[in-house]
Length: 378
Image (cartoon, rainbow, N blue to C red):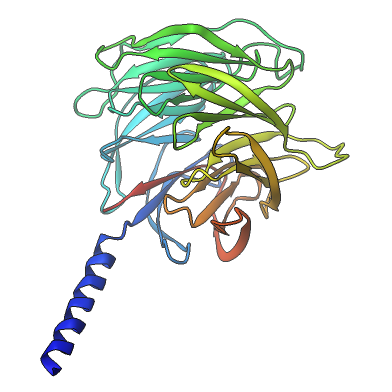
């Protein structure tokens, strides 16, 4: 009898150990602005998936304004844009997932002025940039060693809209690959259009061609900025910087169909606003979006699982100024907010049932944080 109990206990211990060993661990890679002297470049922090605590792991310096990042599917490389006016570029770095160490490989022109977003396709063969200053996007080939090739495809845009000076010219603000790796979705804040490009991963260069239809038009003066897909691949969401609205779409093989536009603003609000980022929770039940200027908050919506439409749930202060970017950890337990102008990152606990956020004791002080990316380390 004792042997049976001990055997059962041993089996339970082994099961627990196996579960613990199988539990995913994550790092957070942070892009920053370096032009104020408060930051040196790109930082890596380990993330405690049980408490939300962040612990310094590594960094790479001598990078000019690496304000947005993307990680290769095999986690061996990091790609970062550098906002440097006419000399703007996109850089490739080796990345050691165990230590968080990074080393520079090479860089190529970003395909325009003032890049503010970078994306990589699901095969890791191309990196895409959104160039706010010139309103262009580019597809940059990734070579076998992770370096960036010179034969980039640059797509320029024309047009303007009603809000000046923000919409005096094209303002490309994000480029997002669809879940099936077939189409690139390009949000142009300056023209109130979301472009759609067919992507051919078999090509060695120039992989993008306009889809049919080539774009979706949003309300004049809306300013589409960031974009995210629902985990089911059937819904998608665009946050508008200028009118602080969110448009919900159904999505089918490169076709976006608007089904709802909903405000991010409180009733009777008359201050300044600048909507910034948007993310769907890993379980697909909630959408979160950030607002800056006079609001500085995260707005929370529930998702109708049959239609994709949103219902307002609540709003949470970002605890700082200018929450340009935020991220939900892959477990869905925490949401991290990067406040650009107060040089801090706050960690919120996420209620998976209600979608609401509660402040934890975890805060990271870091100069000008503007991009947060989770990467699995095991």
